[in-house]
Image (tube, rainbow over all chains, first blue to last red; front, side, top):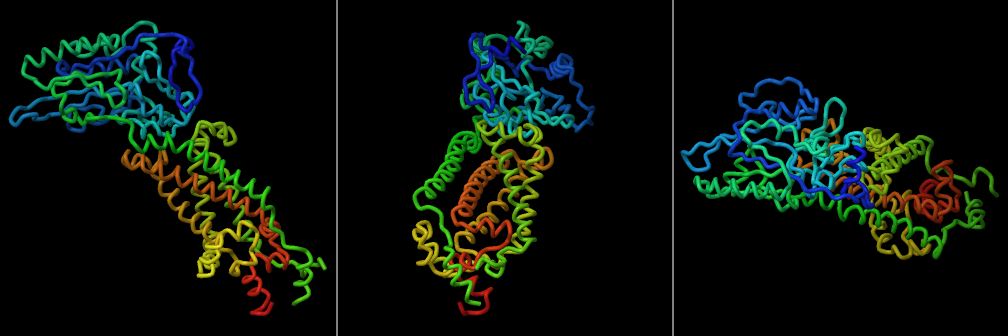
Length: 294
Length: 211
């Protein structure tokens, strides 16, 4: 992706500045759950565009199929039958996949330079040729999205069709959605669009309708319009307040300089000790004295 | 007087082989671990055949370190029991680092510093093995929750840094106390060395209580 390499603003395991000459508009995908009918056309479009064919599995008794994300299934529909109010059944269908965080836990956790990048348009992309298959991205992600492929041991997830977006096309899932539940544009436009939808939902009685653009990861580039924004957990366990876990933040933050300094100071202390106190030797004459003894 | 009788055996050949097996495996594992831990050290992964090979090899090497160190534990655990004299030795750590070992309680086969390192290494390796299994992909990590994996990576990293710092100290001590390295390569040390640094051990091996 020669041109797109100019638009990389964040790279995994890299301590120096990334190329950032160009400016591109910040984009977002908006998923309006109230308009989704669960047809899975987006799953199919994702497979088609990305040439992915997951193994044909078995029906687990519910509509979720495949039952989970995998190396070859980058988006799945998750169906939840819930009663937000007693006696009022709702079927909440959420298209699950990468949220393209502004502060991606996967990118922070990744130890391989340039295996995970963040473009100036907001897309977080995996460059599998640099991926070493350690799975740290799985531990780093607050949304439990990346999956290691059993075929090649590399991590995969939704690219937000970075290849299509780079040439001015919308992602494949957006293109195919028959109800308009999936929308795509600049992040600002999508927020405006969401505001209209939320006002409409509120008029229809969903007083807690709202936009899911979690602040804990500094916003995402996949956003949901939720009928029950006060309870994201209703939507198949969408996290209430996702953020980079404290253990991950320490592991990839303070632990690195502290650990490196500990090693450096230990070695330096030894060096200085040798220069100031000096070696400890058993003297030869003592050797002779003791040698006479036995 | 530098004939053969001046030199006494400190470590048998099997002990030495076992020690250096641990050393070589540990250094290889630690370098690979550092490469995975901090981007500053990622270049080290080239020594192990690249990032992916490092990721594949590191856990297997780690298990080998544990197994090899278990050999040292069976050989040396009894010699590493801490005594009251050892506690006094540790209280006088200033005398230790200023080469005033004459003021110290007599050290046995291993001194209190070596003993502490030994038990610390064993503890650290156990924690590294347990936490390492939890984060070992693709084999074992899928069986553990993501929150446990997050705890395990921190435990693994912290213990690894402490252990490497301990090993740096160990290597320096061998360089600082002249004659120690030969004790682990040729297996032999001079009587003067034994008497100066491990007097209680020297008395024991040179026959009873006389000096």
